[in-house]
Image (cartoon, rainbow, N blue to C red; front, side, top):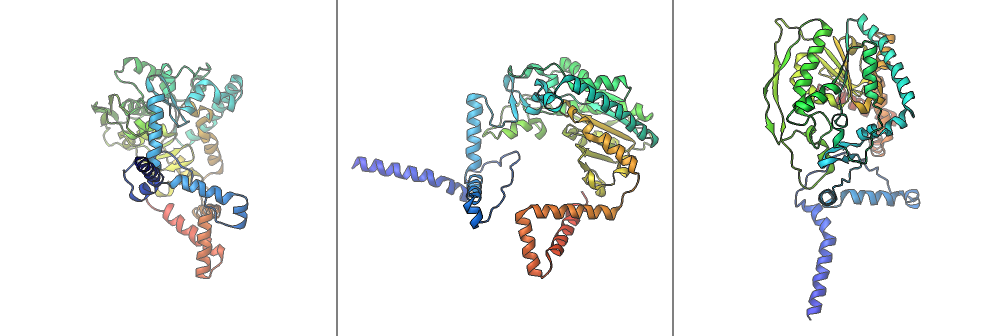
Length: 445
């Protein structure tokens, strides 16, 4: 009899464990934070003779079940926490853990170890030749900008790996060549206006009580932004040959409460519990020394995500309009017509409206020189002011139609709409594309 009770208990435990995901999926208890990071959408496969025969439908069911089973977030975070706490490892292949738990983005450690150099150029000599050609080409761009009375500034932003190489794990062996340093030397040789923050940050590093990068972040920390912003404004002051506002620090605000950029790598580890954050400054600051009858200059920025903290700071208040071309791909602007992919905006107007063009890049993006902006701008000046709003709309609508056609679920919905409304598929596609265009590309930000 006791043995029979034991079997029943074991049976109930096993059944409970098997039913637990279903219970969690229905009740959402306990509540678990959504997983951070990017998850590729699962392409829906409809059951058919062909999809069942070749196994694609079964594969879709497996993927869908794995992505939607109850408690998925809980189990992933539990496993990740176990790996991190016990083995000091992360399941995110894009994060490298260094000394004392410092986190680095793999793209930056690949640059340090020479992996990126070998993939992009093969040899140091090839990289140096390409860099020199790129900088010489930049002189053409500067001439074109000067013809429109536009100043040009290159900003070399230091990466965490460049400032704190001592924090890297022993497995990362520096290759000895830094392409960003090569560009700094060439920009100086050709007298191109630039700010190299690498030596500046190395000096700050020895004087600062707090690190210039957070333990679990990859961008420069909030604490460095007032200094960076003031340095940029003072440099632009010289380029424009007129006074600009400066930055005044009002409160150092030492805290353990980080903003999202300061803990971005931690968040993508998807751990169960938050990590302990060392104290860091999250300063408060404002514009000061604002000139009398100040006319705000317009700014065009071409940069990676390092510009984001400047974008949301008092730095941007020193300018009239600020167009931010992220990676030279997407335009972020207060002007609705420029809030789009740069392929579909009036690039000539955006460039010539600027008083200053600033391009900012880190070590990782030195291999994609200025994000291709030199070629983009020179081509824009060559074509001139030929922007046609109606042509732009047609290009964008065609682009949306292609997106609809490439999405099985979306095109299926449009086909049903065409039958329901007794119109051709082409008419239905056009109708949907125009609606998306109106909603996504003509709305005010």
